[in-house]
Length: 355
Image 1 (tube, rainbow, N blue to C red):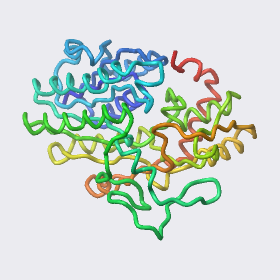
Image 2: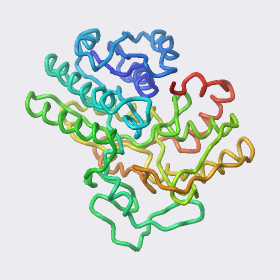
Image 3: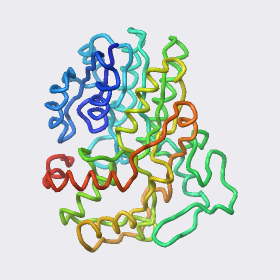
């Protein structure tokens, strides 16, 4: 078995690689990374020590993928992962499209020539911002919660957002690149007989994450709180009531192992997130941080921003039914892990924050 991983030195890519070594004894695990994300170089030593082949390469350059060698499966974990990619001044809109969509096409061509299956890591941000902002919610203390007495739109319920929920624009430039990548992946699968598995992931969180305010919010908030860095509630009247769910990469890895073992039977699009039990508002996250590190002030900016949504938890019912999979790490366990890592690595944000 040969498994190739793009973006292998990123948080998710590296954690997947290490878990796949255990999940597929004797398999060759290899990957490429352009090391453009600050902090990504910190993972190379851990990967090599585990016997994983790590090459420098950028998925925007088709020839760089040749460094991966043979592959039975490819896990595409390379992306500009922020919902503000292309508009935040760190990357241009062209760069976001070239990386997240053009890079996916190069990966698909690589799979086509080798007859390899593809596990494409997509995102919950493919879902329509317009329709997410119309969900029937009520205020319960310091969080938005589902109104169970209301009628919910197709693909949504108090149990979360399902795969059938609308992907109508706007979804952000980032979300649009992932929607387009999903479409291209499915078409390549049909045209060339490739097993294509699409995992729409919720918010990833864990100890070694390179978190920012736009991506990896759980990890970022814990570290910023503990470090005394400024924090601000943005939008929704500055209440911090907006809710997201957290997923640990170890739980994602368990699912990916089962999907690869299932082969063509795993083909499809799957919601993969912590779900409602692992959902938490920013205000609730602040309460947790206050108890762990002591109280502090949080700034308020009540004006809404493009692409902000009040409540987004992933309904993973289909993945649970097909793969007998449920997340095992509770959100509080994940936060404990991040906090413990921060205490040992108090400069982590400085090492990994974007330029």
